Length: 209
Ligand code: GAR
Image 1 (cartoon, rainbow, N blue to C red):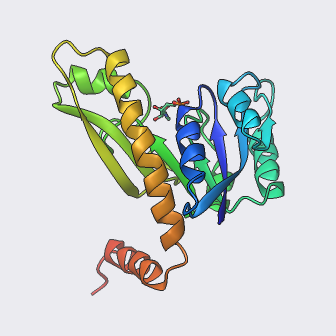
Image 2 (image 1 turned 180 degrees about the horizontal axis):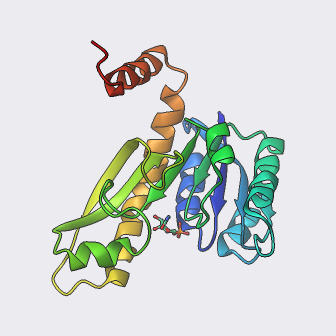
């Protein structure tokens, strides 16, 4: 099974969804570490109770690159092959991102490319959108801009508040993330999938003739 380190900053409900999905006998991944920049993160206690290794290091008073380096060492020592960001509210340094290129996923609470960054639900409601939602994407240096691997829409109801929408989007996230992660790690070694990636890259290149 592919070894996955999950980075969280708080509640960790997506981490819990990923964890319990990994208990299915046919899960292609398992969690080798849950790590947080907040030593009090609720999700750490849940991971511990389920026998998953945890690592916590507050970022306060630390240079961003030093904190990233410590998180990276923890992930590598745990044998992680993938890093999965699940409500990890830190922007990672370019060095960190490039060393995990193609092996780091994030979940974002909007239908990307709409609303990268913060306050996604309020922005979707304010814009009069019919749907909010969640997207799982590969992490690249540009915030919330990597290739989208999967997304689920969530209807915006009359009288919706950012909090009420956020809660329903989380239900959708819990369905989406384990499935997309499982698909991704299963396909990652697959020759056709890698060829497809190369083709996409070729399509993205400007015409030279
Ligand atoms: C999730 O809704 C996730 O999409 C969002 O934080 C929440 C974490 O909840 N992530 C971001 O906003 C990333 N910029 P959880 O801790 O219960 O999984």
